[in-house]
Image 1: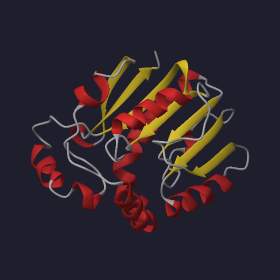
Image 2 (image 1 turned 90 degrees about the vertical axis):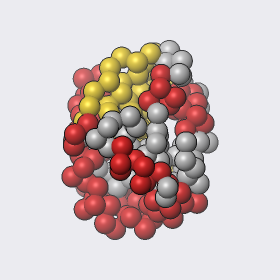
Image 3 (image 1 turned 90 degrees about the horizontal axis):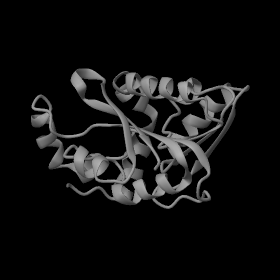
Image 4 (image 1 turned 60 degrees about the vertical axis):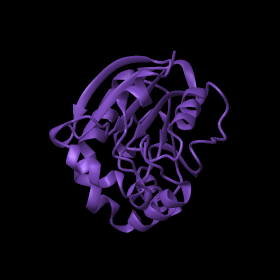
Length: 206
């Protein structure tokens, strides 16, 4: 699997921040909406969004839930905070934090969402360990991510693999290695986005 460094992630997304919604919003919104709709059906009291970015999903979460969002990029967080301030009736807390080393206690959140982050983090195994630690036992983890293997996207994956540490994400990202082999229960997997570019994975933290 190609390498991505923490410094590259911070530098890349600080640079993307002013134009992020314009560049990626249309592509990522369907996955965010499907993920948020799944959270609404759960009726949870506390939600952690890992990689909250510019806050595209904040408005779609349950109004009654306590929402916490973390990100490595301060520039992205500034835009998320602006969105959060407009949602005056919501309980939203946003923080600059490394998701591979979170400050939260064990078994803290009812639900953890991870939109478009798993293949971006420098150490996916470490991230999985952390989101499982802070999610309550029996809680739900929702991941939206690109996973390699589609013939349609193979040329794109090959090109991006060569420059992974420059663009800040991996395209050669195995579903089996990064989802199946971990000891959680896969409840559902569905394709989202353009020609199955992404998958929404719903997991029970068992």
